[in-house]
Amino acid sequence: VMPQDTVLSESQHSTQKITLGYSQLGSESDWRKANTNSVKESAKEAGITLLFENAEQSQEKQFEAIRSFIKQKVDVIAIAPVVQSGWEPILQEVKQAGIPVIIADRSVNVTDSSLYVTFIGSDFYDEGRKAGKYLLDKMKGRPGPIGIVELQGTMDSSPTIERKNGFREIIDSRADLKILKTRSANFTLEQGKKVMQSIIEELGEDIDVLFSHNDDMALGAIEAMEEAGLRPGIDIVIISVDGTRKSFEMMVQGKINAVVECNPLLGMNLMQVVKEIMGGKNLPKRIVLPESIFTQSIAEREINNRKY
Ligand code: AHR
Image (cartoon, rainbow, N blue to C red; front, side, top):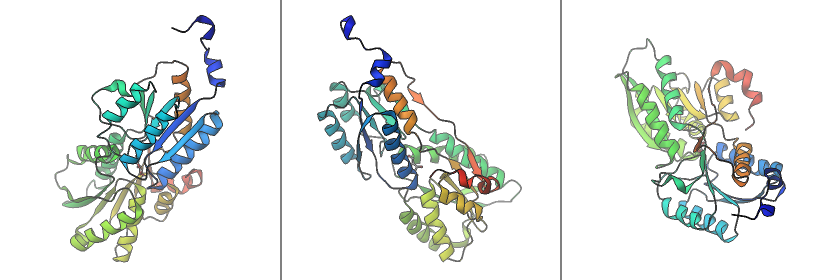
């Protein structure tokens, strides 16, 4: 227990310089770049010193960054984890150093929930469900079989696992909706294009629907479709996730049918949480921000409001 005269009030804490170490998983997508900008700008605005490391999709590099944050004695560590598994040992190291951890964006799979204070990020499971519901609605009255291709994100990452499961939970109610192919394209435009090219070669006109786990892969897939003489949005219904400006442009052009929102602008919420932890406040284990779904009918009106 600190002697009475050294106990800081919450306002004194907020004027004290806080140092946050942020381990970002990579820069694979426009979503990720917007997320990075949001974290950097919000730290500046909140007067928090930020140590930022980009792991370029390597969990090993994330471990290195976290160890360097421990060495530099930061006040709080935030981690956007590339994959879900394998975090227990490093989080034990952070716990031993007495540094509170915030999990941001993607979740970790650990049995000991005392290893982090809170997890702030989207409900990916619900995003998958929203994509499924849109598809059921779109295909109402259209006779099957309806052939679906799924482009998955990074394997073992929580958005991939949960979007995949949420989508299936909904479309399983119609037996003639068939997932013909499901392949990972690692959340990038380049791989989205490559993987889609090879799927088109295999399946050709049997593809009625593309469910892409993010916008970048959808943009790559659109290029592949057009090069193969297929009309995205017409011959193939496209449902994507994120809500980047580029995906809105594609909706305006009729090439993407719907985009489930995933909001990368978490910076201000994150800084708020950092300050609350430093102020000794109790936080909920899970913080989810509300999100929606965008369709072609609102894309034109909304496109200029997109911040990334
Ligand atoms: O974890 C969020 C996902 O990661 C976004 O949907 C995707 O674009 C990003 O790479």
